[in-house]
Image (cartoon, rainbow, N blue to C red; front, side, top):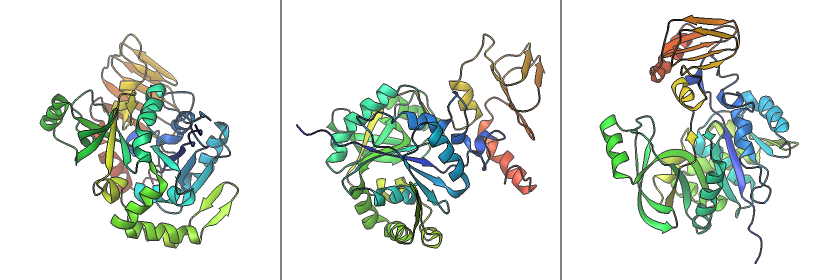
Amino acid sequence: MPAQPLIQPVILSGGSGTRLWPLSVPERPKQLLALIHALTMLQLTVARVQDETRFEPPILVCGARHASQVKEQMSAAGVGAGRIIVEPVARNTAPAIALAAAIVDPDAMLLVMPSDHVVDDVDAFHAVVDRALPVAQDGWIVTFGIEPDRPETGYGYIRRAETLANGVYRIDRFVEKPDIAKAAAYLAEGDCSWNGGIFLFRASDYLAALEEYAPDVLNAVVKSLEFARSGENEIHPDAQAFAAAPNISIDYAVLEKIDRAAVAPVDMGWSDVGGWDALYDIIPKDGDGNALSGDVVALDTQGSLIRSTGPVVATIGVSDLIVVATGDAVLVMSRGEGRRMGEITAALEAKAKPRIS
């Protein structure tokens, strides 16, 4: 029996991560930070696909603003041979993925992952890839659905239909972020997963779907690569051509329109680390329920995340706070208010603070 062709990982590293301000800023967003481990989020993502019996060296798609940092971190992670595609402008996931799909063999199986997610159970991650692969090889675009453990209102949901293979289902429909009552109902029904933004498919199947449902994306990407500049393991698509691509996600461009869309539910200790509250939930805490990092003194303090990369931070007689200090900014908020971080970043932008622009 011939050996199974290796899967081509594609890691998307284009986010700005402002919900983790002031530590994460556009110049150095969360995927380039060591938030939960000595390795950065990007390096942890790369590490998940280091099995040479399963995976090719990864392709990274990143913005021009972060290209030098990405190269440094790829090299430090021991994957300097991986290719980097440098987006001249941000255009969401559908064009970013198309760049990678267009430069590989048409029959290559692409495993597309964000660079800023946590996966605690790597064995479960590899197992769901194995389950999904035969379905993807049969021409389906498979997304990995995260098994919900609470009625979460911050994620979109995927409702599954009939079984296609062991643990892989046809997608019935996508559901936008629900209110709390609907989220609780989805959890009780048991046939919905969170939309985690991880995909497996054949490169040619994705490009064919773009040709049918989002030709403007495909045309812009093809033209940008036709006039691209290439260096050692680097591709720089033409800026003017790529900027003509619509700013659209793979979900809206393709997945919600095609007939052959599938979901593989998985429980793999996943988090998108979408803000300080989410980070508090997943990192170790002391006996008082505190997650402390950096130069911090916490007296009579409970249930708080306190982190400093700058000045010493001292607290007395407080509870359930998020306190984050850097060299030029301090954030103090009650735990549970992370959903309002957009208000803070918008206010800072309005004041034209250089630290947020």
